[in-house]
View 1 (tube, one colour):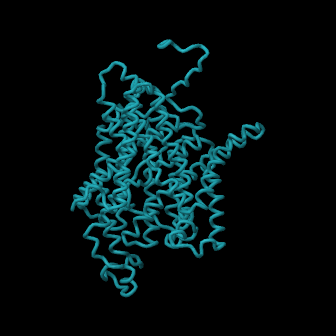
View 2: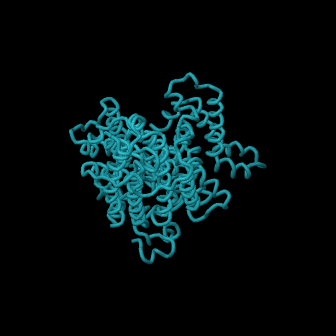
View 3: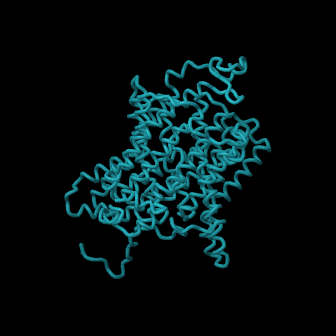
Length: 558
């Protein structure tokens, strides 16, 4: 018999949920202050990974040393705190941490390798031999020698970010991105959000394996502590106490345990005879940040001097900015899901994108070597802790600003070995990827149209960037290789991003393929999101996304 209804004895399917159940604290329900402060500090620890990794990779290529690296990390941390506050107060209003993005790195490296900076000599040697102001490539600034190659490169990067930020500001505040996101459906969102998390797999276990004796214990302990609540199910008398402690503060517990273990290995001489690469990954005293960081320093705009501008570099950075715009759209959706909010209305998404553009502008004004986007790892932390409170993320922003000013203290936490951070990524990126898959509940998985769009977009989203990345790793440059670096980046950067490729392919196919068929609308889950097409389409939007201080009266969402 076929086509009949389900029998009474058959199990009923799980109902679809607009809001994720099982979250302890949603956006508008903050935890008690002591718990909120610890949770905020945990968000601060998690976002340190990207904040440290990007300057550590880029500043030496710019000619800077440990002192410049420490100052750039301080600046990036300070700007991330400002951007997180602005986003949570006036942007999307979601508990999204705004931090540095790896997507900007290839374009930034192209600026670093630009021909006009290749004639600089080693600034340290010149400064040691001739400590005189404005001699060759260094000069005295506030009684310290400053690398001119580093400054010139930084100013060029700043100029590119300042110009590129205009793209997101215009798309966001003009409402153009609102008109684009209105065509999103649960089906087209699945590849985008899933690969926002799964697409970062290269920063997971490969990073753990750089020092497996530290990274692997961190991963095992993190998983055990975060899921210890399952073990406590067999001990009802301690279930309530264990639930509150273990699953919400698993990061703090695991990082402290493994960090102490790594320090014992370091002082015990376990890496004394190891290669420099191993020592850099495993030792707890090789970051060079504590010695290079000043005790107190407040970053300020144009601290590196007046930005310089190049049209080609600005266009290349603008394309990188557009890629992060697409990626952050998926990350915003994941954050709204794990914060147990309703689907983010297009007008609120557009508002958040506009403020992200302001964040990129601040990155250019202050000089952070990278632009801002939604921190994917912190979105995963929302899932681990089941706390989506806006107040917690604002407290985390306070920690970012506080420890960026008190340089020595912030440098202590920033010196956590990278394999420990990579182990955290293995869990957090997985959570974001799974959050994307959860939108399949709104789709008809028995439809061959759904299967084609879903499978093809995810496969292409993984396969095309893999080709571009492998080609770059082997040849040293991307498949598009002309004399114009800026043109190469405009093509190579977007096709190297898994969520960008998957999201664009899914969006195009979902909105063009057999769209007029009567059953397609339900198959793609579009009917579930009809009420969220406008801000006032669902009464819950006011609770989650309204602006503070009655600003909705002056900046209404539509």
